[in-house]
Length: 307
Image: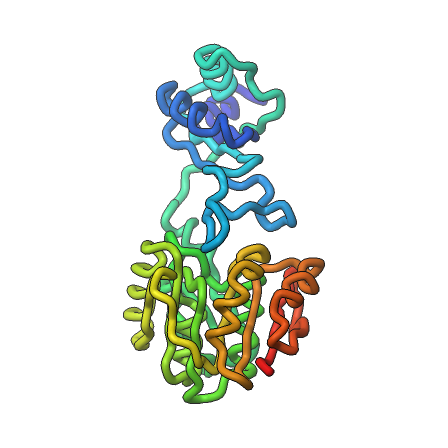
């Protein structure tokens, strides 16, 4: 490296990344900020794998421990700082060994707003739907139903395979005027899609009050009328379609409640489960003729008609 290249590199922001067990994340994060880190971001090191871990409990299932079993910390270090020295300093402060494996990457100066927005491109769902952030207006000639959804605190932007599978089923099978319950609505994307596809009464339900606020705002932006409720307010039975995009264990625990929400002859759409989990989840719904409607990237979508 030449002197000029070294000067340019040392003048750049740098990102330090390494893995930690869940119980050490908060202590290390606080110590890193105290040592001068500009920011500390924690992510599930097993995200998008069979070991991905949810942070929220569901009715009948206690909340899991805070944080992920294997957490990746990404630390933004100030210009001119030494990430290795910062790592060793924090380890000494905490009286612990510094992580043996870590990465350090230069962060080039850039338009961070544009760079962040570029990560979220429109997501086409078959021939009928397009999920797009607000900074991507509809293109001339695109006849898909346009759903505006900016990334936010609540889960669901249309990019995850489980969300795509549910959206695809709705686009292909939902009939105008049918009533829909989206149990575990998150951002409200499935409820909003159902409303835009012509559903009649649409209700989104979630355990998280923040999700309800997010879904309400997203419904306003998309100019659709949907009902929203917390899980403590049990919806009335008799829906034509109930969709639940959550996780396999909650789907099994919630089987009696979800089954009761569907009227005879109505459809139940379940997602958030891996393909090997499909048979076990289907067995929890004896009132339905369940089958795997579709699979994507190892995730499955179960659909059943109530007998």
